[in-house]
Figure: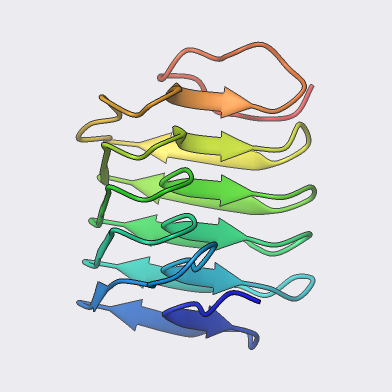
Length: 142
């Protein structure tokens, strides 16, 4: 069982100007769960988590992640399961063990004004079960 720093289960929750760390194996900084749940993470530093920085469960979103730093997490900076959607704006996503952004094949992710997606262990952007995409592309399903 993982202990997450913040778990969002309700629509419209905003996490603003926080420093988050989730100790322990698989603990994420922010987990958003619940079909159609929309939320916003803004101006946060999420680092050194045993899991991912921000993890979007099946069917959530859109979730906005803006002006935040996601660094040094054991998984990806942002991860998303099937059916989720996110807007990632002006975030610094570096030094995570897996990807800056790793998403399932049918996830919709829009990237805007990215500060950096470098130095992640396995790469910048990755769509599971599909080829890697160019950082300037919207990750719209095919």
